[in-house]
Length: 287
Image (cartoon, rainbow, N blue to C red; front, side, top):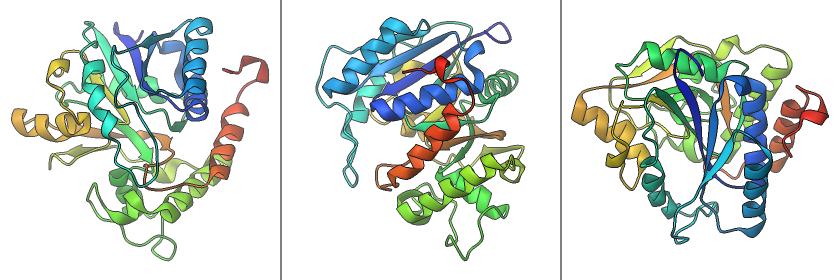
C-alpha cells in the first residue's frame, strides 16, 4: 500500500528460471509495499506449471490467475512470432479494483534498482494525465536510444540507434543486447548508475513502448478495451484516441533480459542471479 492505493503486480508467466530472477529482483527492490502479485498463468510446460503452483502455495502475496482455455500458450522461441499474447486481453479484464496501481511485469525483468516500485507508483499517482508509465529500462529500444544519446554507449561498440520501436540495433541485435547487459552489470557492481538517469520522457509522438514493465492507476483506461496486442492498445491506440500520452520515468533503472529475437547468452542470466542473490541472506531466497 502506498499513498492510499493498493500496489498489485501482474506477471505473465512463465519460464521458471526467468520468473525466479524477476521475483527475486522484485523482492530486493520493494517487496514490502507490494500488496498482491497476480501471476497470469500462460504456459503449458509441466515443470513451469509446478513451479507456479509452488509459489501460489508458499508465497503469501502470490495468487495465480488462470484462464479456462489452454490454447495458444506462451512459447518463447527465437525468431518466432509470439501469437499467444492474444490471451493477455482476458487477463486484463480481471484488473478492476478501485484505488489500485497495477504494474505489469514480463517474467524476464531480471534486475530492479532498490526503490523502483515505490518511485514508479508515486510518479504514476502524481501524474494522472498519463495513460501509463514505464521505468528506465535497459534493453528497451526507446530507453536504449536515450541512453546512447546521453553517452552511455559510444558508437565504436554499438552502432547508432534510432527513435524507432523496431530499430534493428536496439530490438533485434543479440550482440548489442549482450553489450548493454555487460555495461549495466559493471555499473551495478561499481554503483555507477547515475549515467543512465534522466528526469522523464513524455511520449507525445504516441510511439509504441514495450508493455513489459508498465504502471497505471485503476480507471486510467478500461481493461475491457485491451485488444489482441496489449502494447498496441495501451501505448499507441489509446494515446491517439484520447490525446493522452504515456511517459518514461527515468530516475529508477531496471533490466529487461531479452526480446525473443535477441538470443542473449545464458551466462548473463547467471550474472544477474549472482547480483540478485548477493543482496540478501540465502535463507530468504524465493525458491
